[in-house]
View 1 (spheres, rainbow, N blue to C red):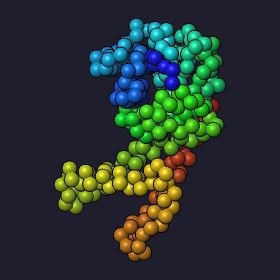
View 2 (cartoon, rainbow, N blue to C red):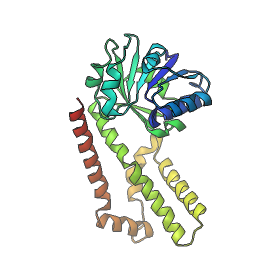
View 3 (cartoon, one colour):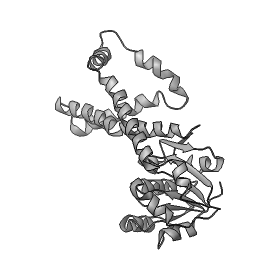
View 4 (cartoon, rainbow, N blue to C red):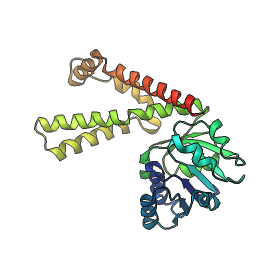
Length: 264
């Protein structure tokens, strides 16, 4: 893992989350960070909060002072922003652009050749959650393994599928919110209902985390016929509730692929 300075082109929510994660990691906290001046308020807040975080005077200065460069601008302006920059053949470039394939990005960053695709999520700030990486690289994987669970994809098309999976975020939060609000409406104090519901969902996921994922099929079927779990399961299934999740993912991947086709 040979990186002294990591630079960010773009200082949006995702870039900020990555920087918070880096600076919160005991292993990575000494890494120097160069941030784009594009979002001045957010960039200055990061620089004032953390040591070894500097706001560059320009995007080009980010490149000139960094070993690794993370491209994290909004996709519609990505090409125009990145093509203006002069990359070095020594740069390692990491694209977190949701709708741009490596084949497109590669043409923008010549003569740099070390290019990777990554899908982090904002909870990288807490150094948790999945981080999609393509292609495989030991150094990049080692660095980001301190910020979450790095999953290396065999083909870039698999990255599209992980992008689509992230589209269930708001729906999942809404389930938790709905359950907690039901508790409140039926007599639980607001704080206690939410506290219990969040803890309950955390505990359920812990049963299938890590090397316990093979438990999932058994846990899906593990319920008493006619019991409360059985009643809820059958009611939701009878209304197509579970099928709607797959339908939603189908719609998400369709949009994702349409954006890709329009982005190259």
